[in-house]
Image 1 (cartoon, rainbow, N blue to C red):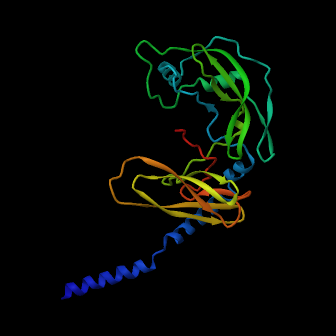
Image 2: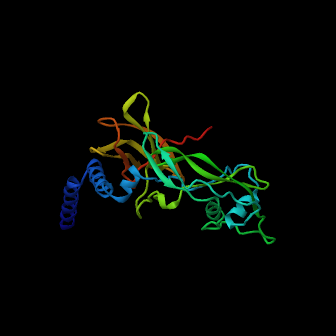
Image 3: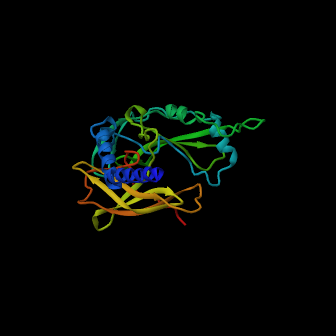
Length: 286
């Protein structure tokens, strides 16, 4: 009898504690408030809105599909050689222009500096040179031309050095803007994982956004949430674990969210990482 009374008391205690626990909505609001406090007024906040933050780095990878295998191995190991005199007397600065009309004047690097950066071996070498050695990537030309570049403030045209390599159809490209003018894309703090990875406006629906988010194979989506302020909007997709046989792969889906007013000049942040998702959803052709 005493054991039964103890068990019932424990059940009542656990039930009482559960009734005082925060709801998922309350937890989201607390997290969103934390994200906003950390982001607002930070150095990366200012750089994201006013500076030059390239989202894909300064090295532009060639189209590897159909590329000879030796090219990737040689590039990874930094096996390059110059078979041409690189151009000199190139412009020392340029003006970048964003879709909203804002501009920024930035310094440029020479072809020699770009080649020195492009020809470095990778930080992590996945495949060493074969016993006979790597085939040398012989540079036979270099040309300064604009390329489309995705930045934190939208897509722009940016000058880049295009290097021609003997026996390779594709160009090896390095953005010609000096690293001194760039701010690196922020990475999530340890233990924080992304959910909303990209977004875009929904045509003819000014308050609606399409969110691209990642989830596990057994997860179930229960809707979206938004925490809005005058200058920031934190978004979240309510994903919960489901039952069943789960594959060890991540899936990507899209879902719409409706804000209380158009996003406008406000910045969107993912509640998972506290960082901005990419503007523009990359769709895989079928």
